[in-house]
Image 1 (cartoon, rainbow, N blue to C red):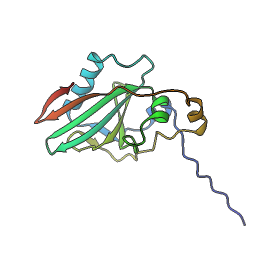
Image 2 (image 1 turned 90 degrees about the vertical axis):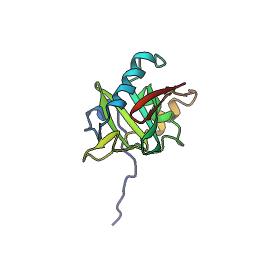
Image 3 (image 1 turned 180 degrees about the horizontal axis):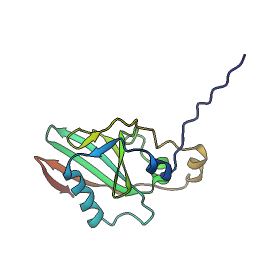
Image 4 (image 1 turned 120 degrees about the vertical axis):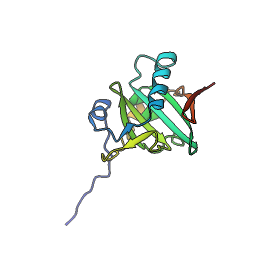
Length: 154
């Protein structure tokens, strides 16, 4: 008897991901303040941007560097840097917009709930081939949380 097993990974659309239960809650109001500041002062993204990307780097117990961007889900998942954005650590929402978390996701910033983290950034080979001539480099703005204060890095 021969059994065939499919090894293809699930490919999510932005709408499917928005309907997933969040894996984290934003625990620290400073993170919300960073997103608000970025959203109101940084107009470096286009109108098609439907996703926040947060990369957190823990410097020490009371200091974090948070890099934030707003971009298009489909473009980001296909063209993202495999070095920095290897594995999704979780996702949540800010004002109904998806926030994808990477890096050092510390409990003082984000509270993890019991929902399983799906690998939402899988894509099909067809999508990769479709974007083969696109040069994609999302703009990130860096912030630092140190001793419960926010510093925007230039």
